[in-house]
Image (tube, rainbow, N blue to C red; front, side, top):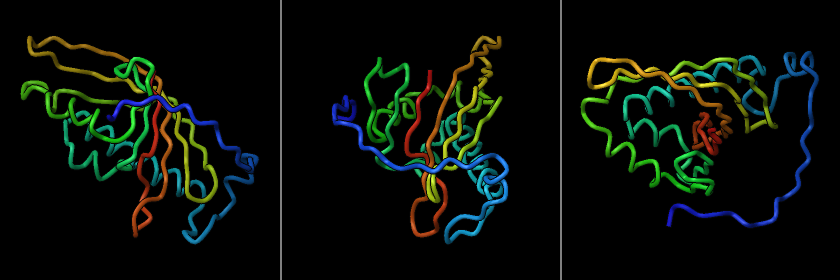
Length: 164
């Protein structure tokens, strides 16, 4: 089953928090990118991910998400979703009329590196939709996404999100 509640105790970890000035000037790990460069790479991945969702492009969605993605989202009614099967249902059942008729805008993004290989982005997502009757619909949600470096290339992929 893809829809599971996690009831494991939380592991503790040590996270170093840098001041904004130290973050801006730091170069981390083997990737040798500044935090500003890492931010641009993660934000680019996030924009591609939201475009894939808007266009019901499941192949790109899978490329940009960890296969063990976890999520809290309204559709799951408070349960922790694990894996991609839950989301595939929505990709597979979008009507042809609604494909490509949606646009997401990222507003007020806050970016944070969580060590060398993890990053967090919190933002408000504004969605605009063209409805089948020709009218428009707008909605917004607050989202937090955690990215990790994945695969041999070390590209950023989404490993967890929370949407409310």
